[in-house]
Structures are given as structure tokens and as C-alpha cells.
Length: 305
Ligand SMILES: Nc1nc2c(ncn2[C@@H]2O[C@H](COP(=O)(O)OP(=O)(O)O)[C@@H](O)[C@H]2O)c(=O)[nH]1
Ligand SMILES: [Mg+2]
Image 1 (cartoon, rainbow, N blue to C red):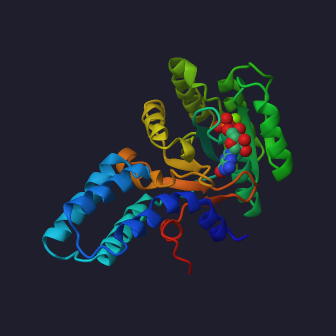
Image 2: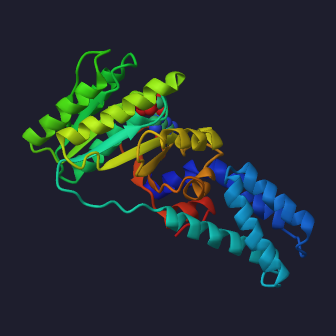
Image 3: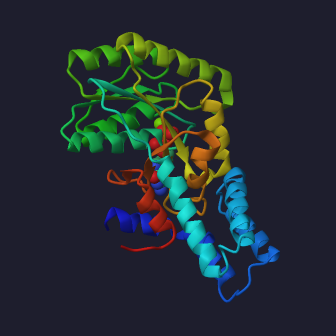
């Protein structure tokens, strides 16, 4: 299956909730009245588009209806798909080139998909001829180091690890120095995500952040927040929390396969002002893609090219 087909099938449930529901709602309705608009609003909210974004979409839609620019059900669908595409295009993140080693710090709660995404990213960069190193700075979770090691073996990445329970900042510093010494192109740092102890987690992330910068001036060049799409609006609340401890440069949205909450991607930029950089649609090594707005909008509305 090609990635677009995968994205199409991955977004099937979200599509059912949003685009198909819109079709159902608009089918046969000749007149756009308040009741229809209210139902549309509810559909958007239920699709996890987010309240702010929904409000804005509805405001513009109502304006269009008042000015008689939007007259038919078809006009409504066209308006919404265009607006959503435009919002999504704004979400596309551009990544600047940096002098190697480029350091990517991965953050996010347990289970969001950090370690898996690191595996996929390692493969992505390795395929493009980059020398990749990963750092096992999640020293807290049992089995986390082994899990990263399995990915490193699969992708041919170097790995820096200490023993379980050791200081994550020392792992990060060790990795930063080693990456310089070994002429590594991309260093990706895994971290722990135990939210039960928010204060310690945030302090730890700040410390890792600082210490990487000591090893490699200007690093980390990217701080990627990994969010689980199946958690919908909760993921947005997590993002607000993590934003307090690190300058997040981009979001990785995982598990878009098999969730009804894929619509949340539409509200991310507006609610958080952080671009979506990557999307994950499965557990496999090839199931990560740079976020492409057009591709995503087409898949969301079931448009096949
Ligand atoms: N279906 C699906 N599962 C994923 C995706 N990304 C990660 N996972 C799964 O989510 C679970 C937690 O992932 P993990 O990388 O260990 O999360 P971490 O705790 O943030 O490091 C694992 O079972 C992964 O295989 C994805 O895009 N789609
Ligand atoms: Mg992990």
C-alpha cells in the first residue's frame, strides 16, 4: 500500500465522522438555515477540530451565508474543505538545515509514540544517507533502553545508553560529545514522559535541554512533541504543559490510523501555534511521513488524485 492509500485508510474513521457526516447533513438540504448551521457546528466539534477553530470556521461560514455567497449545500462543503485546507497549509512546518550534528529532542507523555517515532525517523534519515545516532535518555521506564536498541539495530543507527535509572542528562551530554567525535549527522534524543510527576519531568527536560546545548552550541535544533491523535483534545492540554519546559519546534502526530479524532490536526496550529511536522499512521518502520497539508486534506475529504 502506498502512503497516500495508507493515509486514506487511516483517516477512514475520521472521514466518516467529518466528511461523510457533512454529506449526510447537507444531502438534499436546499436551504441553509440556523438549524443546519448548528448541526454543522456540532459535527465539527465532535470531530475534534477544536472549539476555537470551529468558532472561526462557523463565523466565516455564517458571514458567507448572510452575504449570500454561500447558498447551497455544495457551497458549504466547498467552503469548509477550502478553509480546512488553508488552515492545514499553514500548519506545514519548514525545517531549516543546520550544521551537523543536528540534534532532535523528542518529548511527550508515556505511550505517545516517542521511541517508535525515533525508530522511524532514524530509518528516514538513514535512507537519505545520514549518519544517525540515538540517545537512550529515557532511563526511567523499564525496557525503554532495550526498545530503542532494537530500533537502532534495525536502522543501523549508533546508540548511546547508560544503565536503567541513571541520570538522563549525562546520557544526553555523552551522546552530544560522541556525536561530534563520530561526525554524526543527526542525533535523536529519547526522553521519559512520566506525567505522574509533572514537576520533576519538566525540570528534567529543562536540564537535558541545557546540557545538550553545552555539548553542541545551538542544540537542540529541533524539539519535537509527540502527541497521540487518539487522545484528541487531551493531547492539546499536554502540549500546553510541555510548552512550559521546552521551546517546541514541531509536533509529531502519531496513531492517525484507526482514530476518529484525526480532525484534531486542524486545530493544532490555531490552538498551540506549533506546526505539525510529521504524521504517524502505523507501527511499521515506513509509517511516518513529513506532514503534507494537501495530501492530508484530500485524504480527509476522500479526494483521490
Ligand atoms: N497504530 C499506531 N501505533 C503506534 C504509532 N506510533 C506508535 N505506536 C504504538 O504506540 C505504543 C507506544 O509507543 P512508544 O514508542 O513506546 O511510546 P513512548 O512511550 O512515547 O516511547 C507502541 O505499541 C507503538 O507501537 C502509530 O503511528 N500508529
Ligand atoms: Mg519510549
